[in-house]
Amino acid sequence: MRMHVSRAAKAQRGMALITSLLLLLVMTILAVSMFRSYGTQEKIAGNVREKQRALNAAVSAQQYAEWFLTSGTPPVTTACGAGIVPAASLQICNNPPANFAVLPWGTGVTFTQFTTNSGNGVQNVVNTTASHDTYVRSPLFYITDLGGAGGGSKGTVYQIDAVGYGGTDTAVAVVESTFFVSSVNSRWTDK
Image (cartoon, rainbow, N blue to C red; front, side, top):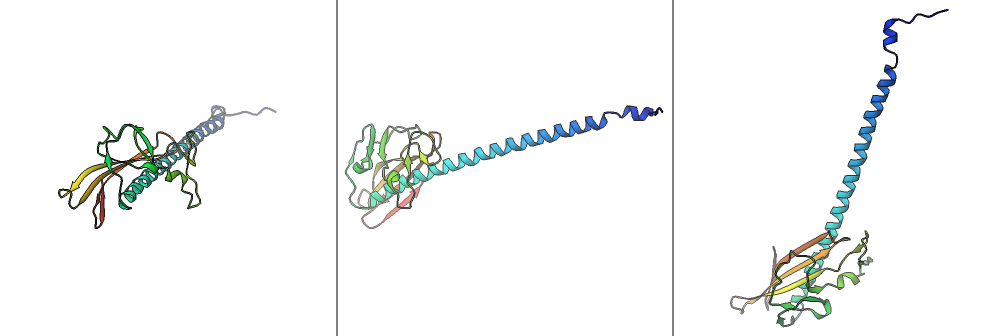
């Protein structure tokens, strides 16, 4: 018994295979692009987290410097040399560095209290190997004496620059504020 296959049926042989292979190819391309997009979004989220950590470290150092200026009699303003000093020997400088945008800074005060404050149950760790729970460097701040306001009789104006790092050297934030200290009250403005 011979079956006769029509000419139309012979022409359609293999079309189901070709169609399914094309659909499989389209689905594969969609899946690969979706996974690639997910990886990019994950990297963006990680970078945003590290930038926020760096900004928090810089603001923390800046606020410590502002607190220091209002907590009592600040040390005498001197010409600060090159080098990082610990927070235990705070200094106020009358010579600002040439450029705060050049990192890492060669001068300033290390905000060591940032790395030892475990009052909230979380230990901030400075470690040179990048990790999600460490900071690559301690935050620094630099206080510049800008002189007296109103001829010096009303108080003194200071410029505070602070830098903070996240888990890598590329996650950096620099903040700056001008801070007025008088014998009556203190006011500050951020730039």
